Amino acid sequence: MPPPVRSFLKTHDLRGKTVRPFITHGGYGVGSSPSVLTSHAPGARIEKAFVMEADQERRTMNTVHGWLGQLRE
Image (cartoon, rainbow, N blue to C red; front, side, top):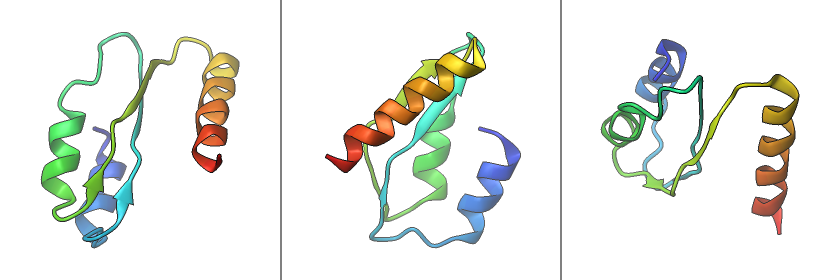
């Protein structure tokens, strides 16, 4: 998990909040991101992560926007 995200999680109390993580990667998979999120956001309701390999910026943005659109439905 990138240091800015870790920093955000350490400085914000997400207890009682719903977290909908999305993870993009360059082909190496999710790594330890789910466990880091769980340990840095105690008491948060963490939903299943949206995960995709981010090999092309346009495809990545279109896919993430589509996922976000589904959350509004």
